[in-house]
Amino acid sequence: MLFYPLGVIGPWQVVIIALVILLLFGGKKIPELMKGLGKGVKSFKEGMNEIEDQINQADETLKKTPKETPEDTPKAE
Image (cartoon, rainbow, N blue to C red; front, side, top):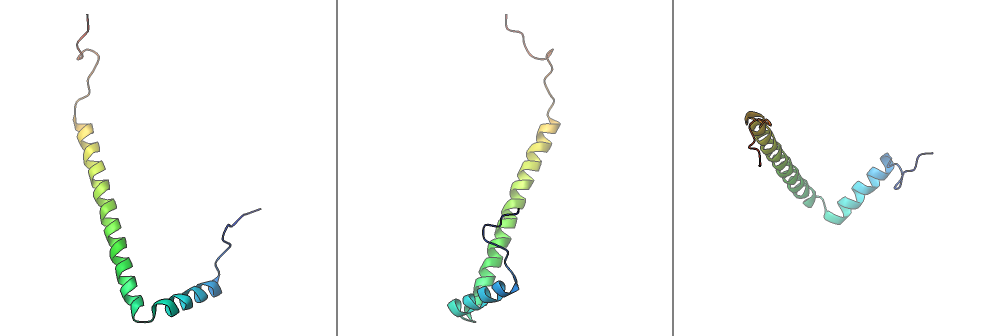
């Protein structure tokens, strides 16, 4: 048995949610809200790409450095 905590959102629920948002914010505010949301998503993606690039650079740096072998390490006597 599958359990959906909030249930499945159908097409009528989407229409009702859209109407409530339209009533709350008005027709003129919605494009501004979507523009701000788009900028936020773009900023988030840029941040994720930046972090991924840093990880890849660190990985490449680690691959280029020579590994120490047991013969290279000094023995403690």
